[in-house]
Length: 259
Length: 280
Image (tube, chains in turn cyan, brown):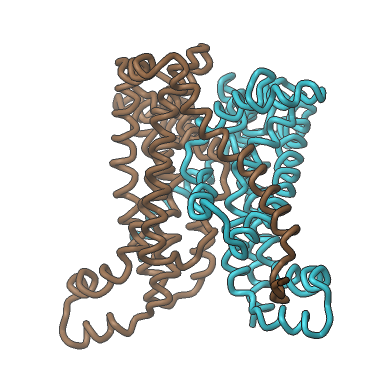
């Protein structure tokens, strides 16, 4: 018990507090300028916006993927099931260079999109692709167990009472999945907001355009602007805490719903 | 004869449509990227790829990655077992808050994780002057890399063990103690066998993250070739130098590691399903 608290404090809590202390060494106006200047604001917009879109994409396709894995039989199912966790196991830098190469204008997928005039790599679109990769397992793995436990008698009852398959899905199945779906969405979003490795290779990293917030921290560190780096970190940490709180609240709500 | 469809089954056209959509999505986001890593690595043939892995810098990077994992994974096991033991077997106020704190590194950006150690141990940091006086290097050196890796992998083992131990309760331990077993004996003979699968699962994920961490390590490493370059950082350097075969060859090695991790994970899941899937 004592050891747990000691290690937690030494490795996590005390170093984390350094960010707040460093940021508070500035005056209020310096802090506000470092936190909310034009360049920082565009970076937040990209980081949060792309993370939100990526989580939404995962919300849709992750739901379908989980549904297929739980309900259908198809060839190579266990292989597909295993590969869902690839983003947890594959180093982000590897994912980054692979996606950048694949979606570059001369890459396997990028070349197909050139005739349509769509550029993915080195644009904000590329950021969304990388964040979608990172977030997918969160949605699928959160939904799967809940889907599996979904009592089939309720579904059968709905069908026997004359509900169409569509009605059953919309009114019985989806509402039951909502808490898990929201949790998965929030987890994917929280992870995507702070993601760095897989994004920087495909993003293009143009200031005011395709620069994510974590990259801004690195740039300010390289310029020895420690207070500036700490300030952006404080903003990002605040969002992390907020997300942690939201996720806990969703899970508490889901437990109440289940009880 | 038309087979009657069970009412809870989707119509065949819907099934086919969903499978095609899911297949296309997974192919473009997961499968093709993985395939392309090996394809790009072998673009100039196997010898070129092997040569890239065999350079002195690459070998140093592989060694550093293994050292980092060899320190941070055992650390994680000790912390994870202690923390989950304390949380699952004892009652104390603020328990839920403690669990949230243990989870914290999951929601902190890796870059922030690196930054905090620069602020504490860097030349301008709290202990910077003292460390310089005593000629100890943490930032831009191996200790910093290990610390940052420990931070990002902090929750992995505890996360797996806490629900597992909570589920098992304290009955068996109480029985052992009441029959005269010492605390340590109770742990080794009663608790340890009960948690071994969960522990292995946590260690596996922890190891994958420890070997693959990029953002946090990138901030504290200083990118000194042959000295403070881990494998993922080496991939970045080669890629930025347009040595694509080299970058993808090292990346393929990491990718292979990821595949092994996934296979072992599947095996472990068959041995014992994870108590709370979806939270990593």
